[in-house]
Image (tube, rainbow, N blue to C red; front, top):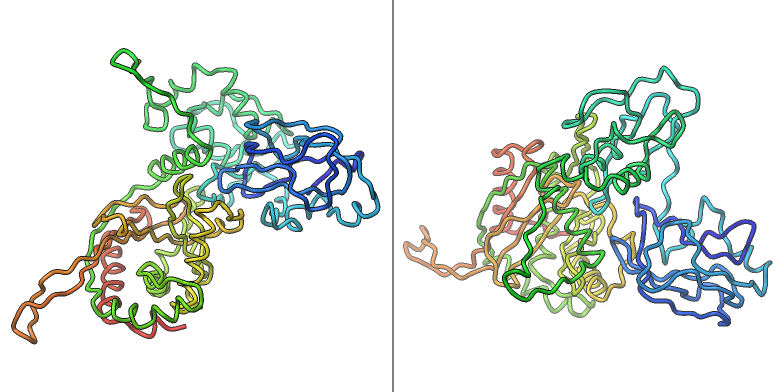
Amino acid sequence: MTTNASDPGAVVLPDLGEDIEEADVLQIYVSVGDVVVIEQPLIEIETEKATLDLPSPVGGAVVAVHVSNGQTIRPGDLVLSIEASDPRASAAHEPSATASAQDEPALAPPTPAPEAPPTPPARGRDELPSEDIGDPPGELPAGLPSAAPAPLLDGEPEGRPVFASPSARRFAREIGVDIRAVGGSGPGGRIDLDDIKRHARETPREAPQASHSALAPGPLPDFSEFGAIERVPMSRLRRTIKRNMALSWHEAPHVTLHHTADVTELEQVRHDYRDRAEELGGRLTITAILLKIAAAALQAHPHVNSSLDAETDELILKRYYHLGVAVDTPRGLVVPVIRDVDSKNIIELSVELTDISERARSGDLELQDFRGSSFTVTNLGGLGTGHFTPIIHHPNTAILGIGRAERRPVWSEGLSDWEPRSILPLSFTFDHRVIDGADGARFMTWIADVIRQPLVLALGG
């Protein structure tokens, strides 16, 4: 928790990391006059990724509440004022401003170290989290009149030089703002996200004219002319899902390959180890086993375990295997991450998958649980779906969809007869800028072969 240095009792919203710029106040737990202790929850907030409690950095009496339910607040905004009862204990507990996010596991992952100010505007790596639009732009050192402008991105008009990070340019493009019309407030006229948002607010009529893409749709008709309607505000999570789906679809040319795999033997493996998983608190599902097989497939096909840096035309090959798992929750779709899947066996994965799914549905995940996925697995088989077309979880390069297995008659050459087999539908969506169709087919065939004949490579620890 970060507090104002001049007022130890001023509780502000800390940096939540991952480019999360705002949060909604869902519930206020305390009132003026209440006495709180260190780490006692003060308010509940909802970010783009999770619902979190804001703990108190000090012990003492609440003298003012500066927020209200439903209010949108940003890092640094004043939340409460507390008259500390033991300033020395508070100071000992209070982390430094630079370490606040790291020392507060209930709120945020470690805050990334600030980038060194670039001499020309940065064109470096801009790998975005899937839920976020862009990184906070860096600052130019003062007195750089001769600095070269950043290169133009597709769709940006030519004209005066613009000093802005690639993520700021992308954000302007996504919301339909001509970045060259934005006045920069930073050193040397540097344009940041606040400048773009302010420009969009001041010229609301110009945004729809900037693009005719799906990201800037035209006005809807008046549906009330045809009958009764009801307008239901989208939750913050649903707005995030809307933005991320549109971003992924807009950025990456999607291709989906449909395949089937014989899971008859794999189902026997699942049956043999099911009780062992339940003893340890897990459920050995086909998803848990497919996570292990997918990690092995990624090791054999490293280009699938990557992200594309479109600004530098570089492919970022990831040497870790953190797999996101799409989870259906009452609030909407979330994608928590299971880390180091390659080093865990199917029993360990079943326990971790059960735990993270339950915490996702109850809203108890933390921001760290959503960070760092390199590939995604989604399963709609439990809802009766066969083949489908999953959308890539940006900035990943691909996603594997699992459908509902069915018993079908399959001709057996050995038996010279038909025999019943369990057939699993698989759908593999990939970014065609990175993965060719033939490579995608090889990846799917590799997975299907392992599923048909479970190997120690895929199922071992």
